[in-house]
Image (cartoon, rainbow, N blue to C red; front, side):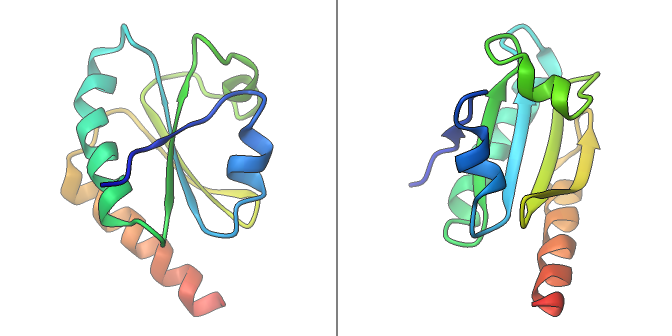
Length: 114
């Protein structure tokens, strides 16, 4: 079973921007209740999309530079990066079917472009 990668300010470039496959990044904090609702969904995605999407988590309190670089104002924020660029942003809690549909649509669009 795969688990989300811990992404920090120091490894963001190598883990996310330089990734060969799309990356779903969960910007979260331990005190954030909606983040706790999204966490199990993100965990499931790390297994469901293993090999197709890298799933990672950024603790915004421990790593303030990266959220600042992308203008993260509210958490949870989920961002998808493809080819080193942010291609989608989802702010706030969304149920798993809505998140999955959004991710699948992005992956389908990426496949068509490849």
